[in-house]
Image (cartoon, rainbow, N blue to C red; front, side, top):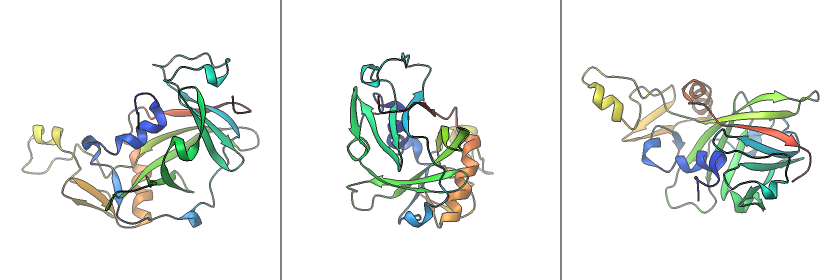
Length: 217
């Protein structure tokens, strides 16, 4: 996995595997299934572009000619189908080797785990927030952010400011979440949904993806 060269979407997934993200919510078993998909908004079919001020791109040119720093995805009638990696259109299973479930709601919750998980590998969560739509109600812009356990700035009676600054996980988890060591686990779907909504306010400039044009290039 290369979060530096396929930044926005891959970075969200890759970030969950580094120590600094121990505060993100996970679960030992899947809390959402395909039965939770009803209620998902329809994303407009076509080519989508990640908004990144540090990656300049002439979007009028074909996606095959865009720089590697660009996040470019293709949505079809049934949802996300593929994306560009080093200028090549790549099917979703190869581009993002994860098993994902999209659960409808406000915000949308994405449950994911690698397609070939290691023993004991947990399920993880992120949230999607549609921000714009066309006259037909199809989503044309979306932001996303990690689902976290609670505020890292929470300070206990016997905790120094320096300990707060280096703490990997909150001491004040939101309802239904449980801190075990340096990790945070959800007990049920409702706790993930609550944390997903509360986490948006803590997201630092969440990345944006917007519809650019019809077609795949």
